[in-house]
Image: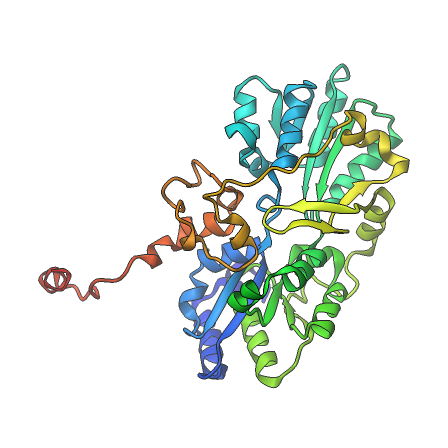
Length: 392
């Protein structure tokens, strides 16, 4: 297949779904986690769940960079904008992540802070060049997908001696998050989730390759199938996971062969290694502080580290007690399990981070899936009288 519509073909999707239904064992409950928020969005948008058998459950994972961003990091960004009066640049979804004191970056902007949405890290560097009398800070978030562009602008700033530019680095890493889900869950949570395999992320794997997932297959006996973001990609990955479980295998398989290689993009990896190093610890929303799970700017480029330049001190902040984002990110609850989902918490008024980005589990379910939670009173047969009688 060459064209995008081929990966969204309904007839082919039904054919793959029929193969899944034919191969699942009726006496077994299959539970797979789609780690990446892009897969969560695709599953909800294209109705993938409706094609799956009842004994196969997809569990949402923490693979949305906006969703795992803790309140304390957003507070630091707001501090930069309000207290230090920098020009703060970041990606669009980050603007709406809830912070302390009923604030967010977009609300701080409404209070007069100079906060600007950019489409790339290069946009932030350009702003620094255009405003030499102002400090410009790029609030960098994301998994390995968005890390190389951040590394590139830091290196360019150093090469061109742009002194009024710095980066507040909040880049996190995928493998430690998967490990935390498998290692850090309580016995009750493990029993609730019972994850048997993972649909591995697409864009992240383009950068890091498929090799880093081998440990989860070998040590934890959990199969991983890397998949693209189109509905046929996801369905094919699920079929591959079903076959591994049925055959008692736990291997790393690559459905996304058109973009992912075992070693990944080694030039991007080298650039990341040059600019960044591992943090000792980093807090993730829902997963807590995890060792070696995020990046910081190396000493050689420390002058471009906003946390160092402005002497920022991180302070952990507890999430809203009514919000279930943490449990949803760990895969032990679903959006409909949250009491404020769709009422107090909506995409227009997000209380938790899972409702902010379109890749968040709550936002995806609100947009595409919440009506599935409403019990069907009567089948629509075209007879209004029969439907009314059934409803009565």
